[in-house]
Amino acid sequence: MTDVSMIIGGERVGSPTTFGVVNPATGEVHADAPECTREQLDQAFDAASKAFIDWRRDEDSRREALRQCAAVMYGAAEKIGPVLTAEQGKPLGQASTELLGAGFWMSYFADLQTPREVIQDDDNAFAEVVRRPMGVVAAITPWNFPIVLASWKIAPALLAGNTMVLKPSPYTPRSTLLMVEALNEVLPPGVLNVVSGGDELGQWMTSHPTPRKISFTGSVRTGKHVAASAAPDLKRVTLELGGNDPAILLDDIDVEAITEKIYQGAFMNSGQICSAIKRVYVPEALHDDVVDALAARASATKVGDGMDPTSELGPIQNKPQYERVSELVADALAGGGSAAAGGAPVDGPGFFFQPTVLTGVAEGTRIVDEEQFGPALPVIPYRDIDDVVARANATTFGLSGSVWSSDVERAGAVAEQLECGTAWVNAHVALAPHQPFGGFKWSGVGVENGPWGLASFTEVQVQYRAKS
Ligand code: NAD
Image (cartoon, rainbow, N blue to C red; front, side, top):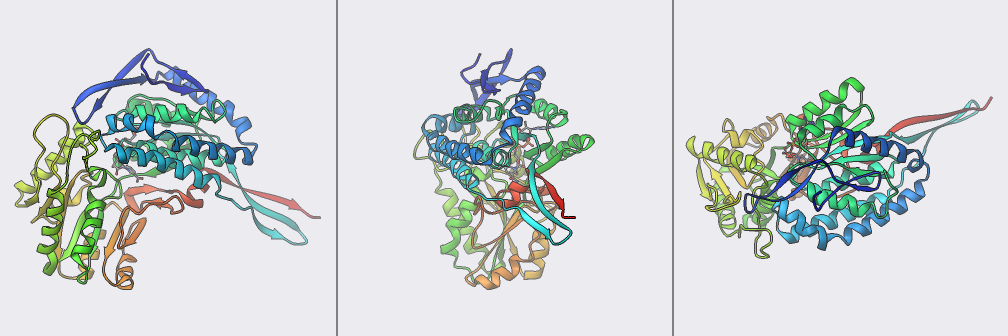
């Protein structure tokens, strides 16, 4: 039995075996988590099925429960924040903010109304469109924002009347186990269950006969497996996948004014954000100024253990990702690029990488074409606005993008040409619960958040009453 438990049918549940969880600041296993068996997964889905019978009935009590869930999350920062930092790596202040963010998302959904839509009311019939819950939802989350991304699923799914079995990433299971344990203090047993284990557990979930919907956040590669696994049973899927977001700077930008925003958009959470800026396009005339400003900011960054209050960026979350970022940066440098800042791992234990600004790279280089998901940013010059829009869109990704200018209208006209789920002007990673978030192309299927995200946890039903 570890010091954290799965929650099945409202009970804390251990498992016959456990697996180690690494602290990325040391590179060492620092704790463990239960390894869910197939029988336990069946029990979790059974518990969710049973809970669904009552949970679906009373919307007012679900709203009240979500309000209480929000309060639980607001109160959880002190206990769960350090656990999140220890397994994820992010600085403690940002871990606390993530927990508060989950509370904020739950508050939003607690009050989100879903009006019934009357579509016919004449001599023949009265007909309206209503939304019905789907049943049991299987939710699978990644390691970059384990808590807040779980809340994007839990809050709308539960509000809609569904019950859930949630699986966190094997890299960051412990904070989610504690989160669900805390939420079970205010939720009826079986409404929200959590299981932990490896990637295989995710496959068991997506191919299990019980869930009617899979809500998945993670990589494109796994998202395709999830879609294929859900298909034979025609389970509904929402897939929130990777991105390779461009930021296009126009020629009238105030470099000094936007540097910090671009830096945060690219390097926050050590660049491990699906919608982080992953490539910056700059007019040739401004290239050197922008590179100098970003390189100065990146070089001044305090990288360190997230438990150190002076750390701005923590480590990369896991070893394979650290090796991937190292490889992409080395590939860029070997191919003729140069590092205006950083360019290599930080010496010593843990998965720390120097905040890196790359120049002399373009399309055809892996770090420009692929999702780096780390603290390394290529800055790429352009001459022509139509050409840069085409280059920004020439990717299988389509999560989000941004255009930066002193003239909002001008930037907006360029942003409208981006093929992605969110097109920001003078902002990036500006996410909010009322904004639908999702990707074009390989960046996903469907959206989360807002009434659109809530609808994705429902089936449409027509209620038709003949009048004659
Ligand atoms: P991942 O795809 O490796 O893993 C995500 C989750 O899927 C984990 O819980 C994992 O255990 C599980 N999993 C792995 N194989 C599975 C399978 N065959 N069937 C079912 N589940 C399986 O992703 P990751 O490395 O944890 O996360 C990083 C990726 O997530 C990046 O590509 C990032 O862009 C993306 N992401 C997207 C969003 C978004 O909202 N669009 C948000 C955050 C992260």
